[in-house]
Length: 338
Image 1 (cartoon, rainbow, N blue to C red):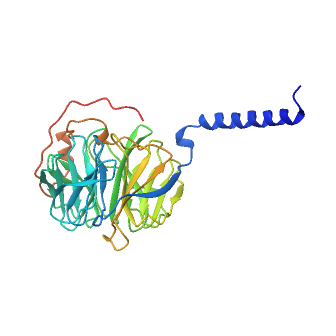
Image 2 (image 1 turned 90 degrees about the vertical axis):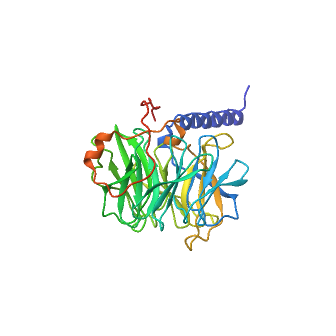
Image 3 (image 1 turned 135 degrees about the vertical axis):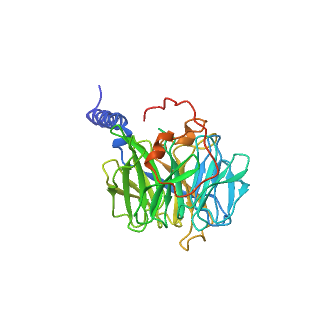
């Protein structure tokens, strides 16, 4: 016959099992985001500021020297291309092209997977980051020195919003049946968002989060948490708009941008950060940490084929310059639900 002590231990284990089962049933969106310890992935770099993953599992990192480096899962890098000017944000488009911005040179470069570079756009006013919407393929750019949000359509830059206080990192997200563009305003430490309207315009800016020391690079996880880097901190804005501090690890040397792992050899729950350095370009590392949720889908992860905004949207814009690459329309694809 079981003793009272044994019955007590069985009851305790049973209770613990019930708790574990209950926690496993909690949706990811309801779980608090958690960041693990930070480690160095690659070093001896020249002021890395932007980074992004290709679909085939290469991490592309820019530098103050204008070099674009391509890294495999082992942390060994090779030179992909060299363009003019120090580089800021890096984005991979759905068609595989890599866009690299240069704030002081006021240019965006397009680089093919083979390393061929071409001028993509100019005359934007300090292009700092680029994002492509996964629903429409629209390409948005933050003009930090001009205070503008710009869209590139068929090689033409068009101003969609102006008067912003140093717009920097960008991200798109769909919630409540609406598509939104999220913008990090670095100097005030705010995150704003604007609806992507059906006529091709943007809705009025709406304050999404405030009280961040510095808001630089941003990226969504699959649960709807918006990760934010700024200064020596890693923060998250939850779907309920609560600002949560995730890490002040000493290895965070003023990271400027972040990207979730993608492709063979990389884990989608590993987050990679470019350490720009607290003297604005003296950083030398790309670091990473294990995170509680995988990254949200990006245009670069959802398949090949260049996506274009309908030409009818041109009627709602005033051009401010000309780029040199035109996209090719493709058949719209059914995208997975988030």
